[in-house]
Length: 163
Image 1 (cartoon, rainbow, N blue to C red):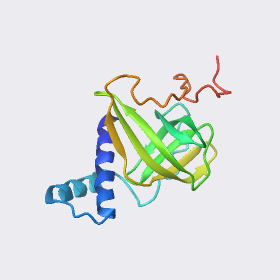
Image 2 (cartoon, rainbow, N blue to C red):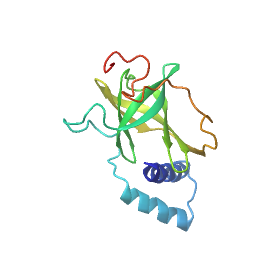
Image 3 (spheres, helix red, strand yellow):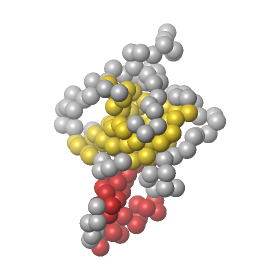
Image 4 (cartoon, helix red, strand yellow):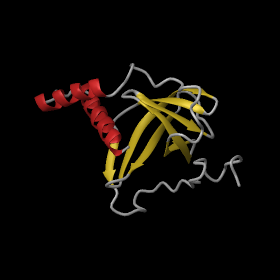
């Protein structure tokens, strides 16, 4: 997961520079072209996933949602956006920050996004700005304190999958 987040963050940072009219160095341009070819994308947020996608699949992530933090499962990644499963979906057009923690070393990635579509508990987000990346030196550093239930990934408001 960490390698993919690094590639995605690098691509989005270079894409942000291009969008702002900053001229990339030859090395940056070569890196951008490599990432453009390596990361899948169609120009819009990833669409709905396969029919057989299981609820418990995907990496656990957090995002801002209507004045609170919400847990979600990351189901799909492209250079244009993310697809996730979430218990309390957001409305299309809603701006949010998506937080991914990757291990080895423990690194936080935050991606500004806009909800592009929503279908039940699955939604697609398109990237909307420059991401940030930070090495977490302490386990509690920069925690958003989202109450995650690691068995279900839906947090304390979960009404299903309780034993």
